[in-house]
Every structure is written in structure tokens, then in C-alpha cells.
Amino acid sequence: MEKITITDVAKAAGVSKSTVSQFLNKKYEYMGEKTKLKIEETIKQLGYQPNYIARSLKQKRTSMVGIIVANSIHYFSAEVIRAIEDFCHKHDLHAIVCNADDDPEKEKQYIEMLRAKQVDGLIIFPTGHNNALYENMNKTGYPVVFMDRRIENPNVFSVLTDNQESTYKAVKKFIEKGHQNIAFVVQPLTISPRIDRLEGYKKALFDAGIKPNLDFIIEASLTEMKSKLEKLFSSEKKPTVLIAANDRVF
Image (cartoon, rainbow, N blue to C red; front, side):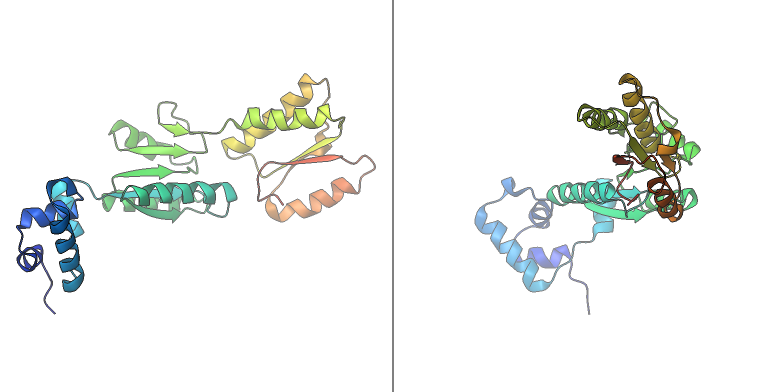
């Protein structure tokens, strides 16, 4: 079956190739409503599919954005990805989502693959262990935004939550309600959000004149978490509040 070209569409619609091109690029202000509807109907009838590769070469952009998430299981990550996808859809961009599974090597491979596909830019929830690669993208001016986690280079463009302050406020609220025995549960302190939340927890206790009980700070992998919590709540002195560092802890 012969591939339908833009020339075929123009001929069938009775317009020039440039007019069809303007339609495909959504430059409707250069044509009347009747012409617009005619081209749209002709494209449907012929089953025309634009050649996006040729189009991207001509425009020097692919209209594709790569999103590399450290772990898509996180509720927060899933919500942010959805918001990014909705934005891309609204602005006629295509989002490619890759899950690195908190694996630096997998993250590196995805960065290299997406750049080879010439995506217009990357949004990365970094594992934090590919600093040389992050630095290279920053130095060469490649469009990249880092989300959620701090990395070593302070000059990169990042969108971060103030995890220390938000945890501080949460703990402070419980203290104001009369709680003294407040426990904190966190996975291994390998990334900035977990570290910052623990610091916020400690600072809130310190500012309230409460000495942190080390038995109330549970740092463990997800597989160890259940037994650690069972031990905590079977002890003589039990916490009245449990602060979870993220949604995966429970």
C-alpha cells in the first residue's frame, strides 16, 4: 500500500502544500474555516499520517519530553508524572516515561537512550549517583530539570519540596496537641528527601525541648520494616505518634 503524502492531501483538498503544512502546524490563523474543515476531512478520508521524523528534522525539535522517574511506585512520583503528562498533552507534546527503579545504571541508560532519540529535554527524578552525567548535561546546555531530590551540583535547575520544614511543622503540630513520644520511620538515608525529613523531625523535638529517643527512630529497608515496628510497639515505652517518611513505609 502506497504511503499517502502531504502532496496527495493538498491535491485532494484543492489547496497548496504550504496550506496543508500550516494546518498540520496548527497555524489556523492563515486560513479560513472552510479551508480548515476541508483539509481535516481530506486527511481523515485518505488516512494520512504526518512524517514526524522529517518534520522534526525540519523544525529541529521532536516535541518529545523524556521523564525519568527514580521509582514510579511512589504515590508522589505518580501524581507528578500525571501532571506533567497532562501539561504535555495540552501543549501538543509527547511524554516518554521511563522507570529507573532507583538503579543508577538503568537511569544512565535511559538518559543516553532518550538523548539519542533527540527528545527536546529531560525531567529527571534523580537516583543521585550519576553526577558526572548530570554535570555534562548542565555544561553543554542540554535542557534538563531535576525533580524532588537534590544532587551535588548546586547550579542545575531543580524543583524541590522543603521536606525539612514540612516535617518540622507536622511534628510541631503533634507536640502542640500534647504528644511527647513521637516515632519516625524511614527507609535507608540514601536520598535527600529522607535525610531532610529526619532533620525536620529532630529539629522540631529539639526546639520543643524534647530529647530525641533513638529507639523511636526506625531506619530500615522495606523488608525489615515490619519486624522493626513490631519490636517498637512491643516495648515498654510505646510511641503515641508515628511519622512515616514516605508513602512506601506502610
